[in-house]
Amino acid sequence: MVKKNACIFISGNGTNLRSIILKSREYNFPANVRLVVSNRKKALGLNYAKKWSIPIFILKKNPISEIILLKTLKEKKIDIVILAGYMKILSKKFIRAFDKSIINIHPSLLPKYRGLNTFARVLRANEKKTGCTVHYVNEKLDEGKIILRKFFFIKKNDTINSLKTKTHNLEYRAYSEAIYKTLRGL
Image (cartoon, rainbow, N blue to C red):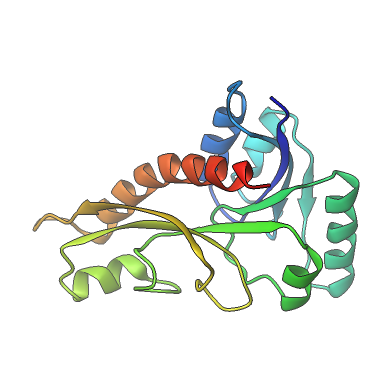
């Protein structure tokens, strides 16, 4: 099996990054993680990249850094960009310039609860179920074409923290499935 080259963007702890790296070690998984990008040089998730000797790129707030990143993605022949807890909005210029797939995971059942603070909003609305959505990234926040959704039912005693934990556990499976589904089409 010829695997596609993936780049994963993170901002924090990198638990989805870890899950994807482990999955990429499996023979049948269609992607190899070739680069990890973060907007935070002290993001804890970068330790996973270091552990598995995956190159790291720190994206700074200036336009030149973005140009260098696009050049790096081209040099590394990156087929897909995977946003895994990346907490910055990609520029329209970047989205247009990277003419391949960019996918994101969001902790709600889109189109509901785009943006931040999803767990609190879900609880306030007394939703019966919640979950996560993997979607393509376009120029509008959390509005790209949906690849897949996974859900679970909310219990009466659920809190923001319990929803967060349940959603993260669901995300690990959902992202792997979505990556497989996306890369079959490339």
